Image (cartoon, rainbow, N blue to C red; front, side):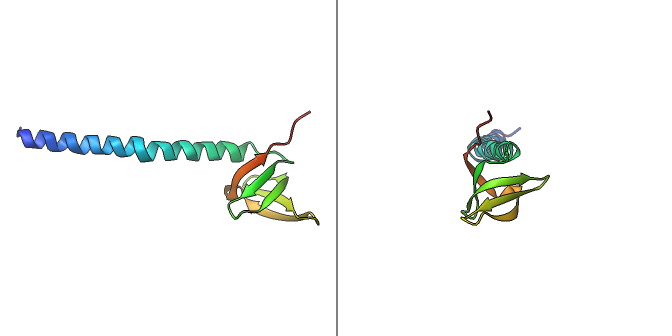
Length: 93
C-alpha cells in the first residue's frame, strides 16, 4: 500500500474519533440525563418549561403532564419533552 494512503485513512479515523468524543458523546449523555429527569417527575414538583413557564406538576400521564400555574392555579397539559428543568422536587415524607 502507498504510504500516503495509510496516512490519509489514519487522518480520517482520527478526525472521526475527535468529533465523536467532543460532540456526539457529550450530546448523548445530556439527552440521557434529560430523559431520566423527565421520567422521574412526580406530582408536586416545580418545573420550568422550555418556554419559560414556572409551574407545579398536577398530573402525570404517559406522554403528557398537566401543570398548574398562576394565582388562579390554571391547569394546562403539555408534552413531557417540553420540560426544560426541575427547580425543586417535592419531598417525600
